[in-house]
Image (tube, rainbow, N blue to C red; front, top):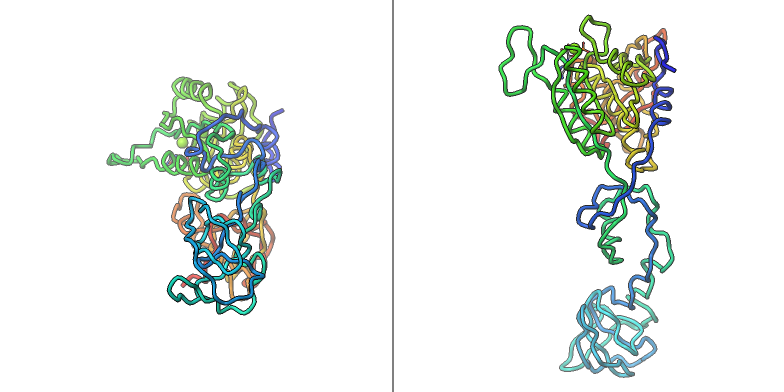
Length: 408
Ligand code: AMP
Ligand code: MG
């Protein structure tokens, strides 16, 4: 059921988007290509690691209970090949970090605690304990242990774990195929000189980067005219070839804003207008299994709408379990006027020495001013109310980038 012209609160809109988003089928990819993909099955250890007791320091493998300070050096054990020697009382084997402990030995004395005398080593450490400087079998992980849950994005550490367990192919969710379409007769390519009344198309480029960052495979990006037949044809074509289609422009109340009409004809429109600034006119529709987001044309509105709604859908489709960021409280350092809708002000959040988060906005918050997003590591959530928000007051913020020291 299309929701008429009620301004929908963003959290309700997000619920609707999530209800229509489903994880995509899974596929096997080579380990080398699995970075930043989302694991589709839990990773369970099928072996102990390390598989052998290993030295954690360069030094000498010894028998801990052997009291004599002098030991005969009977070999050198490097990482790689086990040496066929056995450590017996009165002997030691030189050993490097990561090398397997030779049979008979049960501790490693670090080289700093020793002195070399001809073919002997003098142990200066008074007491050597069993297992000292040794990583026992299974110390890092145990066979049968669940190491990574399904739905986890594979970062450097996760890829390293897969490699150390010998997984050369990895089950992951298919990446969502996404198309980006700019609409507007006033738009020209960045390489073109705009004529009178024309502007350069920035949304196509900013949204492609936002989509890739959010884990989408961008299968197409292009521009459509403000003309019903051509727009409709292009939309149908892209919807057929994509899991998600993102358009910008043409969802307002102008004469030539055709996107919203066409979406209503092609599929089901779930919402059109949000109780949100920037981004009041934001259409969400489904056509078959494809999600279509009709983002506003203003560059900031388009990017904020993408980040809040499209990113959530992409995460569900990509199989992720962490779908929505949890807002955190921040302390305003200056007064902020409240508006008539829930505002997503672009802000800078930093931490003081006590760990308290402080925030300021990025200056003028006009929906066309892309500069308001540059350097913004947070959205400051400013609900409407009578009085302005005062310096020192707390508001909630969605953190979208690393938190640094106080800005200069
Ligand atoms: P619209 O929603 O189509 O009325 O567009 C709203 C505003 O955003 C207008 O000022 C447009 O010129 C501008 N705009 C629309 N599409 C783009 C785009 N792809 N890049 C930059 N600005 C745009
Ligand atoms: Mg337009």
